[in-house]
Length: 471
Image (cartoon, rainbow, N blue to C red; front, top):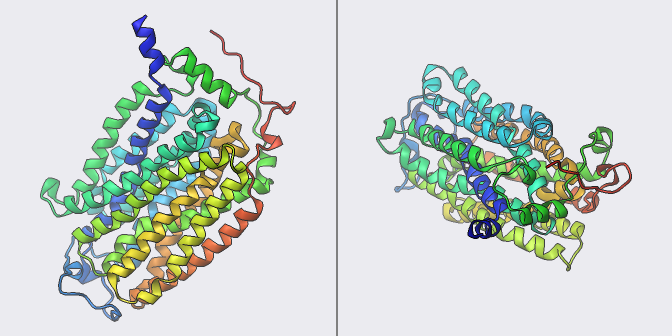
């Protein structure tokens, strides 16, 4: 009797979300560590363009331009290395969504993370072998990690009750930002340490962490409440009655690709990811080449925006659920959150030029621009679940495919803009481009987004009928 009572008290969906949070911490630690590592790996004195003058002077307390690493990579090569992950990542977004719907998300998500972790252990040897080998390994990491978001969306579609949807999704995906917050400063410490020879430890530590996480995930996760061995009957019935444990029916591909509501999500996702991936891959380079912070300051200051983003993102989920549960419609809530995040971020990026070479003022502006964008995640990011919960994983796979493009375009744009001119003016062009993208994306989503489940996402008779589960 006592055992049954304890089982009723334990809410498995919260344990699953906690493990998912940790999983996405690992995902982003494996993704962003190279942004700091590349500074320690690159021979600055050999790789910088000799004919480029510096608009912003190097201050006496900065050692950023005196670092000598093992590799002579110029800004274009660094941009290719930083963006190479996303060439693989874009290939498996759609595949991940289809596989999650077909075979279930548990092993797909876990396998994607653990394979990426194993490849992280190979990066130091690959880099020392050749430039091409490093790029190939990073592409492979992106390929395996690409299934994680569509697989997770598939799980959330089955595990998150309607009234908790924004909160559980926000907590889960905020793990990615916490992974960034922890990975950046820890990477700086590891780069300056003697552990595994310095910068190689930046890849070994999260690689080992990912393998350990996978072992726990295999024991705790399941594809749906109906499949979980420990869940109480009460919790299972609550979840299935709320999400409407659904019949399986064919994916309406034509309706999906011709739906303006889906394209609003796609545009919102691409817009957010332009800013996010731009800073995720290249913020440490901005800190080094324009603001002239040394690697210890760089890694610490680069993490601060993501700490604030994580905190604001967590609050955003609760606010979004509060607004749409009786105050505003789901559509209005999504539009307000999405528009506010993008426009406020655009204003901050567009006004960086007015602080000139004041590096702490510029740091504050960039920090606020990244952090405030968290509001957007109460908009497009959970909108897939609103308009088509049956196909949430599929829609996430589609939107994340398009939204991966900034991952390899943004670092290449930074490399091109800063290669033959003063990085300060090159980065101003990058910020102006970001402002334009933000405004266009915000307006499109504001006009065309919806919060209502679409007719093509429902069963043939228009109702979301529960499935009969064989016992």
